[in-house]
Length: 371
Image (cartoon, rainbow, N blue to C red):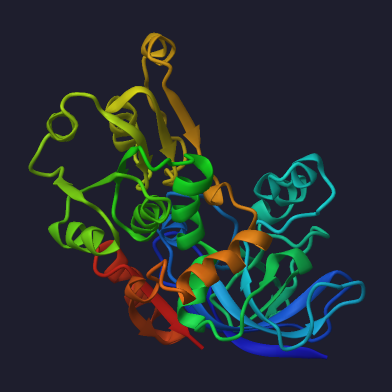
């Protein structure tokens, strides 16, 4: 038995996504679960693929930020039951490798081998199109279709009273941004924090810094509209770096000292270098933005050692999705995180290409597809 459903299929860079009928088995294999998606967000990582900045095979169903309901479970699944509300994680974990057992499941060996190659843990695709050919699922999820077959550890159970439109964003933007501040940078109440880029990840990095009580949060962007949004999410100071020199502005705001933590949430070499360049002695720059293929940066290693600076990467907010997703839901439901304001438009699957065109123009924060 199979399930047939509509999905937005990527075929080549620069081409619009095509809505096609695809199918997958109705019975999950051992260790997998079938999830009926209720909502999915449009993320800039998907746009990297669409415009050709990231090279991926095709055909592929993009999307990796989703929430839904468990429809059925395969043999051996013990942590999920039919009817559970879940948020999908694009770093499912084997729970056995050295990264998993030491608390770093986003670096799981199985993810690097299979999910990073848009396949299931058994190295295969679950979805086929009308001609019988395989269709890959982005990051092993493919949330731009209403059904997904994923490993048990990729479906994280959450409270059933969390709205699907907002909980979907925990699957990427919220966890990546909040985690960059809380888990990767380990922001302290005494810290001055700079966030460069006020899109979905940057705004959540601001929220993360606010959540742990950072004494000052500076937001930088080239859009006045996004900087106003940054204030809503907790920024105490804003810099429009289109009209002001970032380094000079930081020096003025910090009496020449620099910032303790700088989180880059765009993914451009020049903004990564800028984040590193405004650190106070002993400061940490966190790269949370995703760059296009082949990009490089340049830093002065003498300054790094002399001033004890740190430049570190943050994958998925250095999170443990099984623990962090439910916690982020609790923060939201108790008004410690604002997820409602992140959703600026709810659209149908048929409107997905228009949603990405708006993203290219910098309109809104997050468009969310509601199935």
